[in-house]
Image 1 (tube, one colour):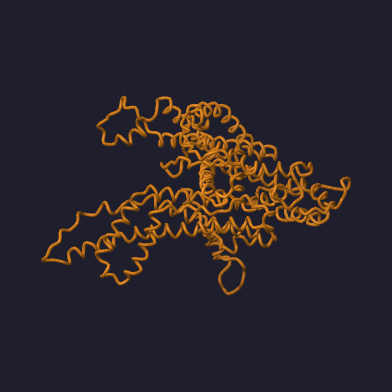
Image 2 (cartoon, rainbow, N blue to C red):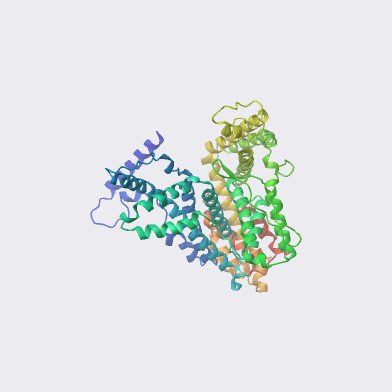
Length: 581
């Protein structure tokens, strides 16, 4: 009904525009076509043109991020294709018996099989080509960030996240490559059939070369192990920090970081720099040991649908330590508390009893009138809290399922041993206690309750969220940065220009003259600019750019002469923490 009404309204407006502005050759600037909206994404040049126009310091890194994200999107599509593939070889009818009277019959049979298997082989070729390209792209960007000239240049968080995404996609493809027997079955049949019809094919040489190349790919691991030590250490620190600080908003992002952390350890284990280094610096040892402890808390991680994986071999320093597998960490004492679905259920019920009334109260406060800024801020905090609860509950639920998938029931008591699906039922039907079934139902109920309220009130709270985000960014850019920029300009610090760029890029200035002069004034003469009250928050790209710029000022690998001990820069750390939410 709503769609029909909206469609008729658009049609009426277009008819009105056409009648009001007839196409008589005059350039009126408005016609019926103005109401047509393109849903296609902007072109590559338009997508980051605002970064170039603003003279953003990290415009080149943002272009690299676009490349990594495009390759990651391609890889995720390939993951779904490989996951859904099934073996054609098992569906073929029995071989045709050779007949002297009809010698061409066998040839026809082989040609038919060869034709059917061609699309399956194309999938394997596509998988091989993608892995080669992804590893090269990953290696090039890691090496580019670790050359001597760039060692003082901050790596944007969004770029680190894109690198982790590529690693995670390669890990998923590696797991499917090793576990999908359909790929090997079809490839084996394809090779055998090719020998019988080789002489009949016009491009037999090309097919033979493809078989040789794919034979090596299908028979060996293609995980990248030639990355740079410094970048791996930086990645390890970055990934662990994101997990410990609960920067991950969704369960999928949290699991991605844990999978990538395990993968980084594997890459590090096989790296040349690791093998040649007998001892590691104290800081490196702490990073490795912290990563090992974190991985040991997650003996099973969800990967794709019902597929879950166990973390790969964790790495400990060679100075008195050996490589150990964390797969033995099966006791409840070693597992992270998020695996306890019964405890998560109790927390979910208690949280819902306290949170849902607060959420409804915040939503109903401004029902009859416009929300005040204070009410918008309160609703923003409640909504963010709700999303945090949803992420926590869903993470526990998925981790518990992953643990059950990896540990089917071994006790035969009460099971129907003659069932044809006994192996499957050990994982599903008989693998849960009554308390666990009730706990999962309670979590599902809690998640659905919060999601339903947030979904129904989306138009209302989305406006408040945008309004609050806008206010926070403008207060930070126009007010908070003012004394910091004043001190930096007075001391002629290297970060002065970057602070200027932040204010010019993100500030919504009513009086643009203040941008060039307000930081020059002394404290008594200084006046804060007036902030407009708008509901149009900054786009995600601008928020990422702002976070990157702040990182480049306060990070250890920094150009900015500001650090955590500086009282003038404490506001930068506080606001960066807010951006990470």
